[in-house]
Length: 316
Image 1 (cartoon, rainbow, N blue to C red):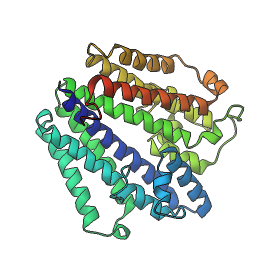
Image 2: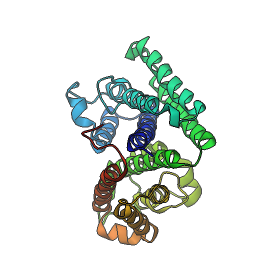
Image 3: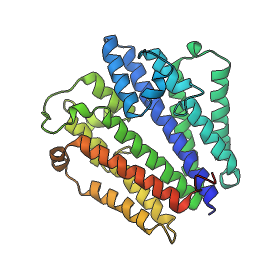
Image 4: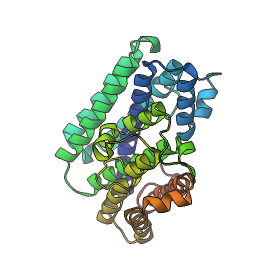
C-alpha cells in the first residue's frame, strides 16, 4: 500500500475516534452539570480534564475563567480549535475524501454525511441555540455507525488494518489521559478502600462506557484501584489499555514491512507488559508514574508507525 494512502486511513480513523472520545467526556460532564453540584466542583472537574487532554491553554486564550457552557461550546463547536469535535469531524472527512478509492461507498457516504450534517447544525444556528447534550449524543452515534460500517463492509486488507491501528492507538491515548486527570486519587500509599469523590469518578466511568460494567464486575463501592484495574488490565474491557495495545499489536503484525520489526517489537512489549502486569505492582510503583511512562511509550510508538509506514511530515 502507498504510504500516502496508509497515512490518510490511519488519520481518518484517529480523528473519528478522537471526536467520539471528546463527545463522551462532554456528555458525561454535561449530564453531571444538570445535577445539584456546586459550581466549583464542576469547574474543578472540567479544569482537570482539559489539562489532561492539553486543551487548557487553548481555552485560556479565549476565556478568562472556567464556565461549564463555555467549556462545552469550546471543545465541541469551536471552528478554530484543532481539538474540537467540529475540527475532528472535518479532518476525518478530508482524509477520507483523499482515499475514496480505498473506501467502500457505504463508509464514504457515512463519513461525508456526518461532516455535512455537523456543519449544517453548527452553521445555521448560534452556539447558544445548540443543545450540547443532543449534539454529543449524535456524534457518538455517528462514530458507532462509522465503526460498524468499517467492520461490516471493508475487506480485511492493509487499508482496514491501518484504520484499526489508528482507532486503538487513539483510544489508548484517550483512556490513559482521562485516568491522568484523576491521578490525585492514584498516588502511592492512597487508601484503596476510601471512596473518592463519586462525582469525579462516575464522570470517568461514564465517559468510557464503564459505569454499568464496573457495577457488574465488582458489585461494590467505587474505589480508584478497582477503576484503574478495569481500565488498564481487563482484556475484555473494550477501552482498556490492555485491549487497545493488543489490537494495535495484532494489526501491526498484519501490515509489517522490512523496516517495521522494531516498531512491532515495541508494540508487542507494551502488550506483554500489560498482559502480565499485576495491579499490586502498579500500585506499588505509583499509577501516575505508570501512566506518564505509558503515554510516553505510546507517543514513541505513534512516531515509529509514522516513520515506518506513513507520509513523512515534509511531504504531508
